[in-house]
Image (cartoon, rainbow, N blue to C red):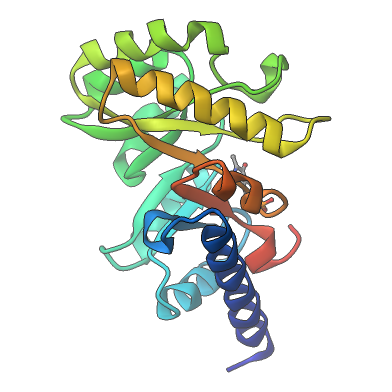
Length: 222
Ligand SMILES: *Cc1c(COP(=O)(O)O)cnc(C)c1O
């Protein structure tokens, strides 16, 4: 192994042990929690090494980058798109991304549903009132979820969120959990929570995250 591989292997082992600890503290099974390695800005060689270490879920934020990297990895990888969606990129995103985490706009949802036979999506929820950070406002969630369900071709897996700025992530993720519990009453299959990044994944696991998206803690600073 070269130095880079030693670094990645060490970091990954630490993250996995922290996930196990957080799950145990929350009385949860680690099997409920999927680790998505966020590989944006990092080279394909890093992704190939993570694949060798057993990672299969990878996250990217930009269509241009994901569309180039995804085809270079084996077919059993699951690719997650969690960046800001641009309408004119949706067709391309849908070609390589198996799961889209950042859906927060009704016109994007409608367009996506017309482009795919089926696609797994998460509805991005805003945990603060900063519109430029993306996400549907909590009061709009129920209507948005119903509209997406009616489109037919999008499978809503649950809610995605990033921790609020200037607030304890525990409080933000606790609100996410409450809204997730409400959403399940409308869409029983939409029970997953995509939440938690390098700096707050333990809080997210404590609040019930089923998918955590970790970049820098595994691959280093971007
Ligand atoms: C970049 C990014 C991540 C990973 O962030 P790290 O802090 O590097 O772990 C997760 N989710 C989203 C939406 C991101 O943009």
